Image (cartoon, rainbow, N blue to C red; front, side):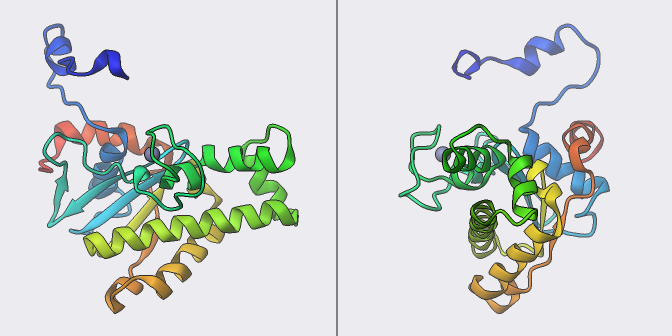
Length: 218
Ligand SMILES: [Zn+2]
């Protein structure tokens, strides 16, 4: 959102309210919520991955949120998985979210079926035995596994928490990702990394926003 670049949003709002204010990326806030009240309560090192219209992540290491030099750490949706897949909104070829987000599922299915379909419809068709959609869903789940292996190899987390709309499909996704990770993570410890669903579902971002004020996380 170029019009907002360098705009001091917190300072501008703070002038009008007496409340304490904070500003954070939604995936990062959701990671904080999962640490505060959700699936990562007991974890000092974990990655929360949200897979919905895009893919994002929040990263904890040594019990602290990793925010980076400018607050932009965790944009994992834009590491490249398959450069032959086509051009992502960021300009690179074949980013993770370009091949494995909900938007990516709907786009690829719509091309195959030559009509507009939603990711929800794709999952329903695959569950009904539609071979082409089943193959697409399997490919997407494998790509999610590929990204998870990269995160495990890079950050050595004690667990991965996956949330966002696409993760609501549940076990078929988690099974495929666990199996992929168990084969391809570099280290034996990485291969057995627990991969669990988010606990707070669609409320995670909001709870995380509250946690920004109530929890010492940095
Ligand atoms: Zn990208």
